[in-house]
Image 1 (cartoon, rainbow, N blue to C red):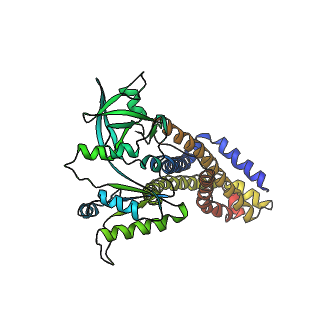
Image 2: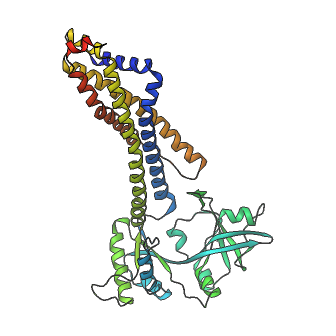
Length: 407
């Protein structure tokens, strides 16, 4: 019996018992669907985070009192005891770092913005030095960014995101108009390019003001700065990180062998943290999906054992006319593999559709990759071969004389 004939027999058996075939395929379909959908959503999220959320170039890194993301309560308590990054620290890094191309400083928070009777809550306030828009690659569609002159004169000017244009100054030219942040007036001198949303959160609800203007309005507060640094090149970023580390350790009088009392973060460190989080979710979900595959494999084994019992006389007849053990073994392995592959193919289709549906009804992006499709099919085939081995070997070991006598 050749391969084509064995496949034809397997598909004919599936078609002859449609309901049983559907129930047999169900576990494999659910398992592969889950795997493909999860992999597609996580791949989409990884790509989206890498390109849009962190928005840092490979040659840019940050200096701050504590990491941007803290996942441990004990670490958070320890970080609160650290010295603040102050204006003098920013100036020291800016003036002393020889391998640093650009150095900027920032403060931030959430404020309410107003214009007349219109207001927008939870606006991302960015109190920046003039270097920051270049470090974060902020594009404008109108006007200008804040300048050194604005910084020196603590000018009451601002650059706003597209959400503020649409909600505070609709149907008018926003340039030179006055808006308020926390009831503090500023004149609009620039409008940012519309970016849309990232993972369900708007990227256009922001306002940029000179850092000195913010410090003037809140002179009683001494918040810790976040300093952003662009290295001479991506290849030399570690050299710049090491130089900034030495400057800050000297300023904070950190003894030799003691840990840094500040955080230095590159885009790679952000992405590594995100991938650790997403990979944990990935493996947990895959483990749950694997249960469906195991259940599907057990169902395939059970159905194949039933098939062996139903076709005992057929097996005896085939052996009596010259079929070898290997032929019988191959026939039933092909049948179990065909069942699993059909289930895997359906699972891939449903998994892709499910991922696209989730992306359509939610902010989660998806990205279907060829390796995940191929992996889903290979896993399904492996399940068919593994769980089909015992029924196939049982069929191959049947005595032809005993088999022909069965009713």
